[in-house]
Amino acid sequence: MIRSEILQDIAPILRDHLVVCNIGIPSQELHAIDDQPTNFYMLGTMGLASSIGLGLALAQPKPVIVIDGDGSILTNLGTLPTIGNNCPDNYVLMIIDNGSYGSTGDQPTYTSMKTDLAAMARAAGCETVVEVQDVDTGPALQAALGSGKGTVMIVKCDSGNAKMPVITMDPVVIRDRFMKAVAG
Amino acid sequence: MNIDKRIADDLAANDISFVTTVPCKQLAGVIEEIDHRTDIFHIPSNKEDEGMGLCAGAWMGGKRPAIIMQNTAIGVTINTLATLIQYYRMPLPMIISYRGELREPVACQVEMAVHTKALLAQLNIPTYHFHWQKDVEEFDNILKYTFMCNKPVAILTDANFWGGYGDQ
Image 1 (cartoon, rainbow over the protein chains, first blue to last red):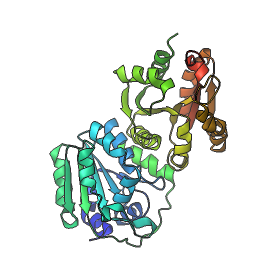
Image 2 (tube, one colour):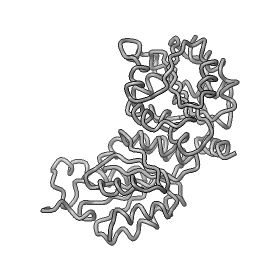
Image 3 (cartoon, helix red, strand yellow):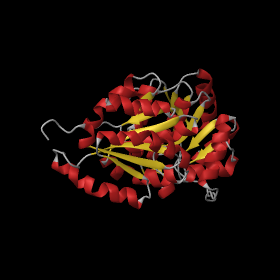
């Protein structure tokens, strides 16, 4: 499976939750598959989805699902110790690890070679780290949400992107409707 | 006057309850003060752009955030300021130690100091420079201004403001 197929699979789960989605094609795919006011799309700023989601989860009680990528996490590796030492129970970081920089032409990342994100997350202090194969993402996400424990999921899948349109929604509109959904 | 306590008191009085920090020697006292307070949640960041991500999320979650960092961080965070904080119109008070200014003992710090105000001006970020201790009296107004206009706002605090480095 590629990322867009996973997103298609888990869209019914995501719909009911606050979602912070990584920059580039992941946000375009989620937007095209199931746009919701509870989705915060990153239009810029590589690497910060996990940090934005962590701030959000620490600030309010609703569950927060971050859809991140291996390339994005590698860009902001300092996020893992911050999560490991401050992880609230309402935080699920789902790293879709396809071993490539999807939005820039599928160049390989180091997770397609020797680097093990699950081991890095554990070493950084993250207590609940689960490794999941693409087809099992839905049940694993449900389990993470139901566990009442902050969770880092590493979802292994194939490299590749669906062709989806660029998001043209104004960033302030995305942010404003998201904040209303958070407060609602 | 205890500047560290004054800054923390003004943050709390403006309902700022989520503060992230990347340390600087000059900021050690205020960071310690914030860490001890029960009315402010302190979460250290490993890098300043990460901290701005945390602040963006906290603000969308209903908390007023602030970041405390060194001016070298302006070099690290330009993309984040432009494409996250400014693009989505988010308020962010940035309490910045202005290293490389008068009474600075470390020459290399001057190399970023000479770019700091120019970079902030290029980004159209409202910028205030605290040089004398009494300048802290503006802090409360600056915080109110930040959350009025939903912009990142820089408060540069130099060595003279913090009382220098002993013999400097």
